[in-house]
Image (cartoon, rainbow, N blue to C red; front, side, top):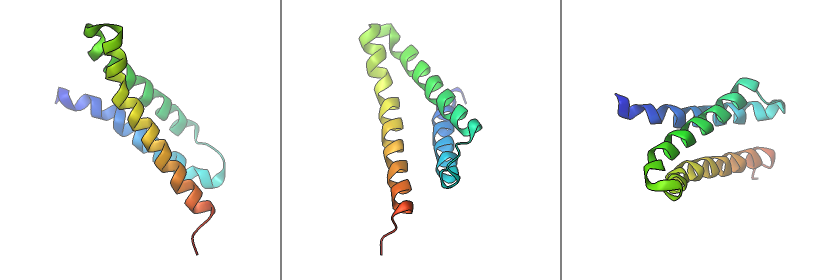
Length: 90
């Protein structure tokens, strides 16, 4: 079961992003969703960097890259969905 623990932070990021997407219509961000997103990003970055730290600071930075890619790609996708809701195709 311990190998599933890193998935918890990633799932927190995805679910918080989805919650923010839903609340974007109201133009008021949900404080719990924002907090979950920030905590999830921080937790998974810390776990990845701690795993790569034994290879030095460069190893820690390389270990953080998958998380950065996840967050950037997820936010890019959320941005596309938000824009498609603002300007639906005809």
